[in-house]
Amino acid sequence: MVRTQISLDREAYREAKAEAARQGVSLAAFLRRAVAVALAPRAAKRPWMRYAGAVSSGDANASRSVDEVVYGRGRP
Picture 1 (cartoon, rainbow, N blue to C red):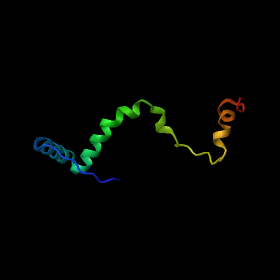
Picture 2 (cartoon, rainbow, N blue to C red; picture 1 turned 180 degrees about the vertical axis):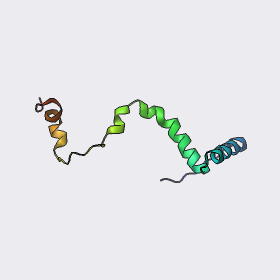
Picture 3 (tube, rainbow, N blue to C red; picture 1 turned 60 degrees about the vertical axis):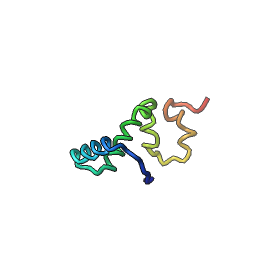
Picture 4 (spheres, rainbow, N blue to C red; picture 1 turned 30 degrees about the horizontal axis):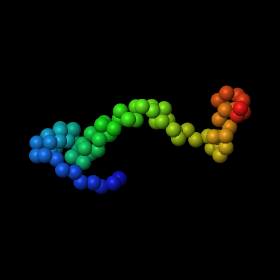
């Protein structure tokens, strides 16, 4: 995790602190979640990427043999 510092106006700080308390989390956790929500639309543009690296075949040559596995034939 990277530590950073931000500045908020008093009202935004007060509201963020109150919402964090309502959710039962720290202000830092609340702000991390808010940033994640704000960035979510970018991730939605490539939803298939959430599966990248999710499965390990144990085959060091898997990237070379994917056509055979998926299509039943070697690379064209």
